[in-house]
Amino acid sequence: MAKDGSEHSSRMGINTRLAHSGNNPHDYFGFVNPPVVHASTVLFRDAASMAARSQKYTYGTRGTPTTDALAHAIDALEGSAGTIVVPSGLAAVTVPLLAFVSAGDHLLIVDTVYHPTRNFADTMLKRLGVEVEYYAPDLGASIAALIKPNTKVVFTESPASNTFEVQDIPAIVKAAHAAGAIVMMDNTWATPLYFRPLDHGVDISIHAATKYPAGHSDVLLGTVSANETCWKHLYESFCTLGCCAGPDDVYQVLRGLRTMGVRLEHHQRSTLAIASWLEGQKGVARVLHPALPSHPDHDLWKRDFSGSSGIFSIVLAGGGQKQQHAFLDALQIFGLGYSWGGYESLAVPVWLGDRVVAKAPYEGPLIRLQIGLEDVDDLKADISRGLTAAAAA
Image (cartoon, rainbow, N blue to C red; front, side, top):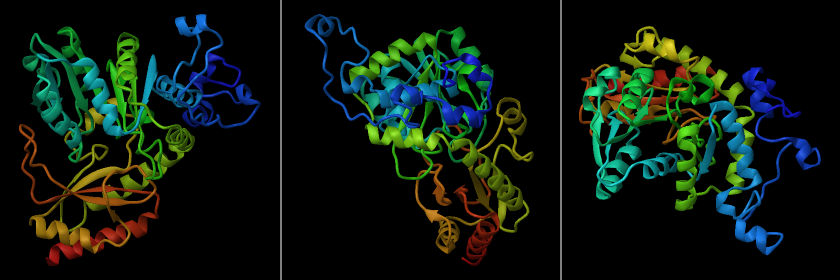
């Protein structure tokens, strides 16, 4: 929203919107950034307003000016009716699933999903009586054959974790909605800058704000944004669960959001340069990045996405864990650590043993790379060290 509150801000460029969305400085005496409100108790003016809960803020778990600033900024990016802010990316998955599935319901999840999402579904949701089924990421409209009368949610993630298959989200949405199910999407890879799920019919968009919105590997946070149909139920469930984020973390993510567009441009440019270069390197059997023309889902990615981020995987040309570990241990700039979206490059071994239907054969072990903000030539040299070590292992 522009400082004067006008709607013309929706026509502004993305970096302008990132710089100015979420709060109006003149609401806070002209200070550019909103205050960090540490709150549990909120006082009411009188007994009548307390009984009616007739004021904007009633208790810290239900929102503060700080959480509202970030939520409004995310709404502006997502085109959503409302956004909740939760303590981690995993909480951004678990809260909406707990909100929309019950005992006896059927839940469809893409088989290439983020492993902690699968773990939550296979443990807690199954224990609560939810029927969990996994589907292949290339189903598209054919997912209709898996939808049952008790299917309540189709949970998507595109591109896929670790192997980066792209789903036909509009086709999945059409099939799900025809059967009365809602669609959730983990859109952390693309962010709303490069893909807006609600514009493609998705009901609930999920982000690990730990990644690109925060951008500095020092904050855990998640956001969940809903369309008009799902917003009220999502918000009421959020309040019931009491799963709220701390104000300092919220503030840091709002601060990181201001530079996310600039950082993503750099991540994208460097990543595409490195991914393209890797396709010609000895010892690399395959590069799994949907923005490359060689990727089998490239046309689908090109149809729906406006950009790509900084994480992809490579398949080594033969070998096993010994070669995988040799590659990783030879790296000097890339850190060995989970998560991504920060300023530093990271590498992790990929394990696909939890999959049940998406078990495509690969020529060798997989390694996931997060390309940070370092210089491309330095990162290429580091990767070359890894490839040399893998070949010698």
